[in-house]
Length: 439
Image (cartoon, rainbow, N blue to C red; front, side, top):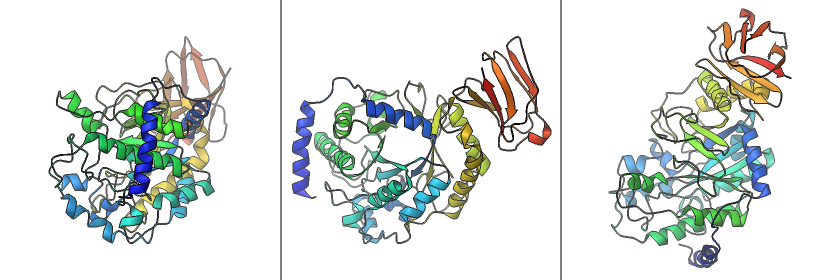
């Protein structure tokens, strides 16, 4: 532990405690950033840490019950010489992505940046000795991409994360600790990320570790989100905050995310009973089945699946945060590169119907819609659908054309029902887009 920096940081945190906000009112800069976030629509998620060495995903410490002292050996041979931050950011930009969210600390407690609060980090504990997050920050600034810091509130390594939550049992830690000491440690790391890196905001995870116990009427600890969020917004009121707690947003949060599901859905089991709030929305999903590098996971989603998920996310008024898990040497799997390049090729042509839009009100089992001012885009996702009928169409129409070349579409609008046939020459296996200009 770097004592001097840690003690100084804690003194400042005590001051912030006294100034904690009773209620959160977003600043003008924050509201502007929320609007930017809603317009961005597409981002890259990066799950990468020392766990990638084991090739079994980011939960390997918990799932294999690796003892803390054995897990601590991993950093000593983490030396990702093929990690190229500029290449990675260029790949994201070519895919049409507007921001990148990176794991600065996952549940294993290891920091992928130069933390002054703990030596358990990529600079001090690995032969690599470079600050990977700093390298990404610099590459993002050059490319005009915004950077978000993922930070896990649950910690399977820290001795004071006690009492344990839903996870992290039997990993070789003493069955004792001080919860408030852990929160000070957590907040000190969060504060240094906010102060020392040019980031757009935070993506928190792990609150569910304690909250699941609360829902089960078992002893649990509170994370005091208000205090943490106050620390962040006191550093920079424009920073955006989202928390993957699977609940409605609370005061201090600026966007709501849905894990592996579209807003309001619960196919993955994380969003049972989740409601959609009034903040900007985001859904995150993986290219294969894993967040972190998994040697045996070759179940890569097709380009069609990923493009259609992006379209459905936009149609449901949400951003799409697509995850990749770099290999332990820092390189990106070829399948992931291929998918990102193919997504970018599609976005180069069709991005107008995604960027800067909001979710449209017209959707059914084969179609979603996006809207931008007086333009409505109908995205028909099933090539077998050649006849479209939309009841209760409330808008007045100026013209209807095929998005690909502006050829007029013959349509009827009778008694509130919009109907048209799709010319077979325009049917697209990925997405047939109809552009409607409204009066």
